[in-house]
Length: 265
Image 1 (cartoon, rainbow, N blue to C red):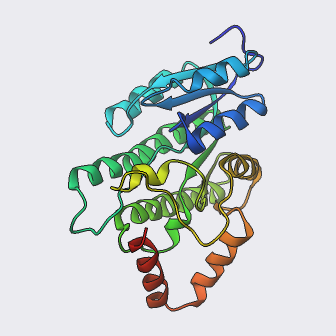
Image 2 (tube, rainbow, N blue to C red):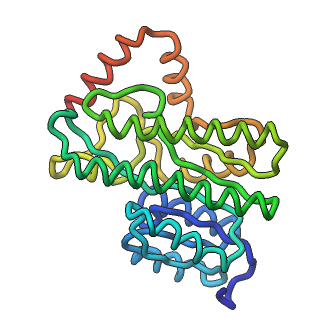
Image 3 (tube, rainbow, N blue to C red):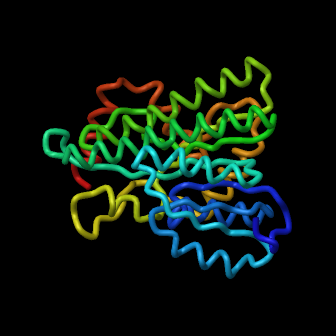
């Protein structure tokens, strides 16, 4: 452990190099947590090391779509007093299912589902032994509806929501002090869409105002660390309204709406 750290508590954040993951790292540092940022390219984390010199910012290079790397990450993390895990790593594959690349989809599922599943299990068992800790799994508003033309990504986020809700219910029923909270962001100002699309220079298009990534990170982190009873959290009035509407409108209407929206991206 670095001698410069002013506290011995650590948080692990996957997908930490940019976007929401990077924003979570900074918000955790503001809360006086040391951070272990995990990504395939961690060069951006040098900025946080310079900005927060009194805290320890670890930069670990792991490709978590390679399943064995998840156990390597966990084993390495046991040398630190980890109290929080944020499973943020993930991406999407956009397009008609008949046309999308199978290998790319399998890699996405390895990251979005298998990595998250494994790290949740590893750290949950550790946190239960310690009788302390919290896991925040990043799902999406995508988890609440199937999505023609973005089918595999939406399905992967539905898995994250379903898994986390079930695990957290188990923890509450057994009166465990540990929680697994699922966070469900809507569209954010990140490069997620440019990676998910097969078109160069693609950007997210949405009829509603897009929340700033830093704002979502701050609000969702605070709520995720505080909540005791909720299994998942939706941030933003527009997102909450969308969920309520989805419960009332016919499924065919929702599917047609999503199809038109995704097809025209």
